[in-house]
Amino acid sequence: MRLCYELDLEESALELIKDQHLRGFFSDTTSFNILMDMLFIKGKYTSALEVLIEMKNQDVKFNKETYVLAFAICYKLNSSESLKICTTLREEALIKGEVLSRRASCFAVALALNQNQVAKAISIFSQIMKPESIICTNLNILIHIQSNMLKTLIKILKDAADGNLSKFVKRQEFSEEVLAKARKKVKDVPALLAKFDEIYGKLHINGQVTTCTLDTLLCHTPGDRKSHMVLLSKRTVSHRTFQPLNQSLWAE
Image (cartoon, rainbow, N blue to C red; front, side):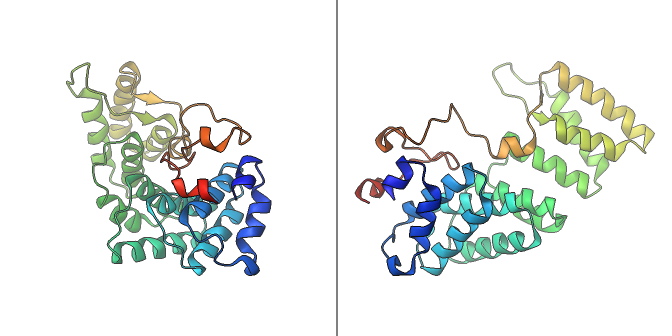
């Protein structure tokens, strides 16, 4: 697995993971997480899902990073089936008493919204601890848009634009893409449209609008991505979860 990782051979690694003659050989969580991460980066989401299913079939323990990867894969596949998988994994995790990260939950919320399951999205979002991140801010706006809570939507944006904050306190940021959806939603209500356009102008003046799409924010990889050819010992952080890779990888 280490060699496949270093040489960027995700397809070979996938064959090894699925080889029934080697079942149980890759028994640690890290091997599966790294392979899913590699496949995700390459946009091979269906293959990444195969790894996830194989991991579950082999009863390999999921950790926090696994859930981030699992929900990210389901989000990218964006189907009713992937939503079902995401929901099942989430429910099983909560039953076991697992604490899901905010990042994992954000992928689940985004997927539910993409599948027009607004009630489910609201339920998951309500359980996110400290929903102050830029991703949560924009997911909250989308929830209000899809729930037709337009007056509350305008109030949230107004409060964000008018907030008398210290220059040392970071203001909420909104995706241009998300704001465009908000404007489209209120365009048939003249009074709300006028308020929205005024607020939109203030947000731009305040530097609170980003050109990043929600998808970009969700899948953002900090720093320059280095080649997989770099020695494994020099790359110790997962692209997708931003967490240290488990030391057990060194022993593979």
